[in-house]
Image 1 (cartoon, rainbow, N blue to C red):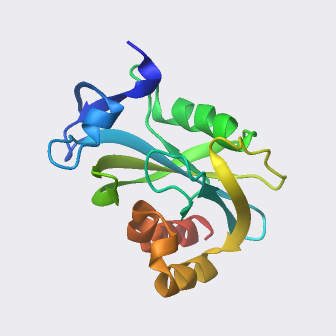
Image 2 (image 1 turned 90 degrees about the vertical axis):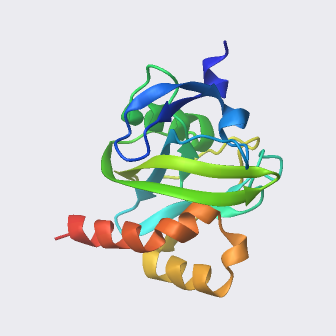
Length: 179
């Protein structure tokens, strides 16, 4: 069993682990199951968040702009450990991070796939330049949260489904942490 291709199935109300499933089966549009996920948002000292444009060859949502990185914890891996692992693998750096909130959601992501994720939203701070893996990331940029919300409103098709769904809550939680 290749743990990198497995996801942790969960109860969608409580995030209680109830099994494991092959990633593509868990994302099947008709028969997929709720599973644990992470969405990492890295901020700089200007309050901007680092965005990535997903590589066109990703199994879904290719070429769409998204948060700094996303993934699924492997069986036996904590949410924070998963965030550190994937940030290094996708963006080529690591930093201090913490879980900000959880965001269960469902969204059609095309290609016969549907997300049913109990998503742990992770915030971190970094002011350097990433070294993205070109197999994962096509492009990247820093952007202010209000500008990001405006861009999503103008061109929603250019952004991942989960980012469109969670942007208001990300902004609210980020502002709460700044007080």
